[in-house]
Length: 479
Image 1 (cartoon, helix red, strand yellow):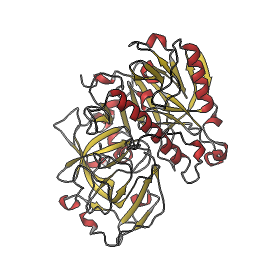
Image 2: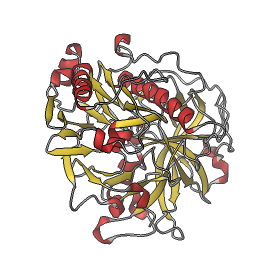
Image 3: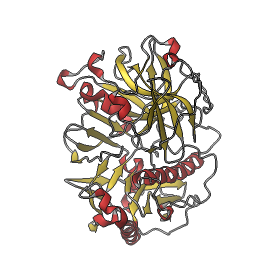
């Protein structure tokens, strides 16, 4: 989910003593980890491995056994377009965004409710710790959860966080440096930092920016929880938007100063990584996210590309120079990445594609997409068919289980890194006999979605400012 900030005045007239406010988060929370306790790895600091649960996995509390695999996948495709639209709005500063760049949602059903991300995380916060579920979001920074008293909040399954039950909860003053990291804040009540944080799909949270202890139980060392004191999070007292009620908030994993990753900082050697299990996998195993050296991406097959970020954005940008379909090279014009009306705002900034785990599909500027589609049509000798979900553009009629030898190799040429994608990274089987290209066109910034990243260990080294990709069987992380 992408965050958009608006200057709004808090409307709580008599909220409550902010001393009884605390937070609940959804993932492996960040913190200034100088006092972290737990497993360490030489000079790489703390190593933490957590489950990253796809919302459609049988392990997810959102899993619906009454739906077929194909029904769940169709909804994921619609959610992907919602997610992309939210990223586009944030990228184009929302208020000035042209609706001509919005993807046609084809009347997507109202029960396609979440556009904030496809993966859930569980973390513990408070002293003594209690666990919560949240949405892992690489497109925003703030970590937040719903808190008592909640005056106008969305319904959730678990109790609201009650700061009165914690011995380590603390409200940040409005003159604190952390309060200044957010665009829309005020002093309420008294000298407390009151924030307003909104997203591209009109979801929002309003509350007090606070500190709390975060405790993580690494799946690698389950009996040795690691605590991070004084983590900055949003204790939301008025929250709304497209939420299921299973999640209590959002875990921001973006590039800003208040994200989980940024707050963990040197304690994890400013590194995090994930390995996403393919949608097509018959395994019910969850994906994993690693903080620190646990997910070190090195060795044979590793390719590394510069990681770019822009001060006013939460996103992680890469530089895409082209795509190859088999031996045919398709070139990516930088003017395709940004509209001419926005070029002056970005100056010499070279980032032209966002890497994102929240979007299922990948999105390419129309000129590059049409080149890709044309090259695929020439290379694939299968009969075409329309997509019954009305989302994807290029589909083939085939019920062959192994189509790898029928599909050309696709290579993404990032700056300094040629990333080879397998068939399950470029095509999705949306019906037993229908296979579709997992890319769409856009008139906005390109997005490298989660299907394209599956079965790769993807590591972000924020100190070196690089992203590395290592081909990996993500279903074998547990062996």
